[in-house]
Amino acid sequence: MSSFAACVAHAEPVYLPTPMGTERFNRSAVNSSALKILRYAETERHQTFCGPTSLAIAMNSLGINDPTPVSLYPYHLVTQDTVFTPANLAIKSYEDVEKSGLTLDQLAQFSTNLTLSASVLRATDLSAEAMRTRLIAALGQPDSRVIVNFSRASLGQEGGGHFSPLVAYDPASDSFLILDVARYKYPPAWVSFKELDASMRTTDPTSRLSRGALIVAPAAAAK
Amino acid sequence: MSSFAACVAHAEPVYLPTPMGTERFNRSAVNSSALKILRYAETERHQTFCGPTSLAIAMNSLGINDPTPVSLYPYHLVTQDTVFTPANLAIKSYEDVEKSGLTLDQLAQFSTNLTLSASVLRATDLSAEAMRTRLIAALGQPDSRVIVNFSRASLGQEGGGHFSPLVAYDPASDSFLILDVARYKYPPAWVSFKELDASMRTTDPTSRLSRGALIVAPAAAAK
Image (cartoon, rainbow over all chains, first blue to last red; front, side):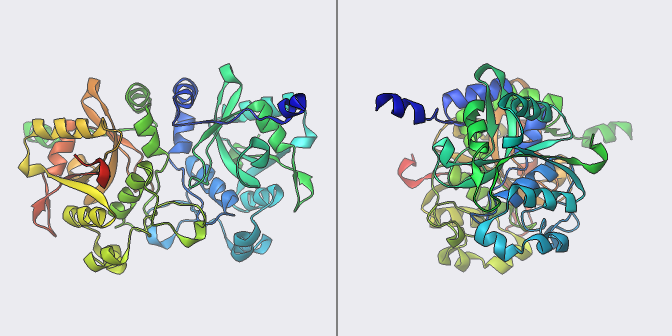
């Protein structure tokens, strides 16, 4: 019984405002790319808008700042509402996303429709080693952004499937910093790669496929 | 002519994603209070909503997370919309704030109506030395937050009067980090105290009083 309990126990995420989270931040996240992402962090306005919100943060941090809301004219900023272009509304309506969110493939389609290059890393298609390598490589590219799609339950958090941008990697603890867009629930969290990988290998009941990560980049920068 | 030009020249703000801005951030802003404020950074949704947005960030970072929008039930988060309680709408309507924003005293009233203690530091009531001391002291208090009210033009930025939260102080450069809520215009900026003080000593044409700073705290923690 105790060995079973040990088996299912989770290494708790290390949240950012704690001393340990701050120490990791200080040594691994104070760099230009991470600060560009943090500069556009925002809270999802509906509890199912983690995908559109993550995409808006990624686009703004890449300097892609259209489509912009009329209220900010003549300035430019992508928002979790403006990513719903006519082409994206055809994939899933605003109202339906409010009801049930997006799948990983749908968020990739949203990205492509917004002129980004988008690569889906489905967790079950890659070994853990390959996934770690791909995530670290993408974080190291100034012109790419990573959005992870994971199961909160698998991390010991409250909730189901979730999207959020990845900000940084801390080699010493082999953990990634997730910029949680549900800021009313959780602060940014350092999650060990082992836990993150397991949470991406869970199955999204809507798509019946595993979760994983989405790497987006300006189309011109795509390799 | 050239000496006149030198007279009006501004020390440019040092923006966060630049190497110098990042260096200052690394040495002076990676601490628990600053990260709590950054964790709730958001963009004003209307170009005149700098006051309500700054207040929402300050309240969330203090752990005061009501009034919350229905869309986030059962979770809690103050937003730039929910600060418009009936008592605050009586001070200035949402529509009128959309047209012309708030004055420093009105933002203080909004704060008081939301159960905060609120101290207005009107720049012309204090010497520069006293203002610096008050700002640094408030940043050092875990349970208080500083919102500065300044003239963008005075800093060489585009725009007029503006509110934004203050995040950190860097003694080596005698500069403060302003978390600009108009993120579609400017990144977070390190501004030398000399420039910040001058920009707070400008007159708000609506109130005909000088700008300055607002220090808010949970009412129970007020000294």
